[in-house]
Length: 129
Picture 1 (cartoon, one colour):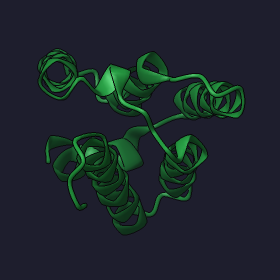
Picture 2: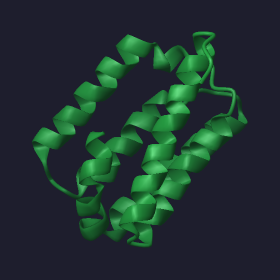
Picture 3: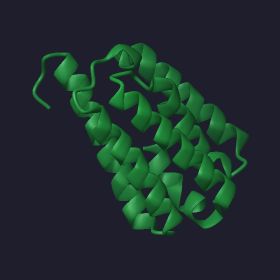
Picture 4: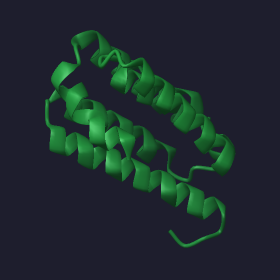
C-alpha cells in the first residue's frame, strides 16, 4: 500500500500543527461514530493530512485518486460499519504512533486499519472476512 511505504517520511517530518489537525479529525470521527453517523469525508481528510507535511503534490493527488476510486468501486461511503468506534480508534492509534515517532508501529496500525476496511467491505457483501 502506498501509505505504508511512505509513512516513514511523515514520521520524520510531521510537526505539531499537523498532529493537532489529525487529532481533531479523529475526534470528529469519534463524535460522529457515537451518534451513529458515517464519517467517510473525515476518513479521507485524515489520510490527506497524514501526508500533508511531505508537501508532495503528486502524492496528495494519488491519495485523492485512490480514495475516489475506492469509494466508487466499493461503495464504501454507503457501507454499514458494524464497529465505527473501532475504525475511529484505528485512526487515533495511527496518530499516536506517528506522534511517538514509531515508524513500525505506525505501519502496523495502518495495515490493521486497511484490514478493518476489508472486513467491513466483506461483511457488507455477505462474504467471510
